[in-house]
Length: 87
Image 1 (cartoon, rainbow, N blue to C red):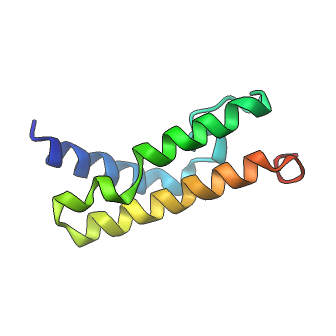
Image 2: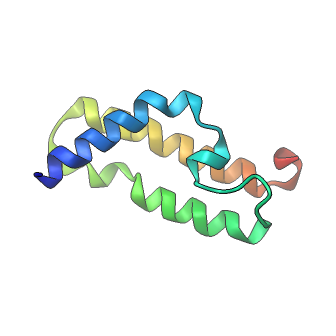
Image 3: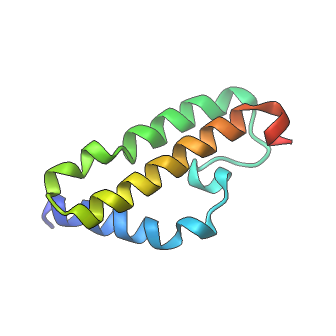
């Protein structure tokens, strides 16, 4: 399969279920994870879902969805790294 098509499908699929995912599921973490596991997972998810990855596709709708996903990943990382918000 063409990598651009595959990436477009991944972005569209994740965007469809984005509201159903909590922060832990979005970062692929267990709710009982250690605090030290959060930052590496957030960084990995940020790299994986960064909008620059999809800019080569040239589809503004997919880019907009990628931006939404990236913002949610960033929000998840920030909230889970704050002990007060995580509690």
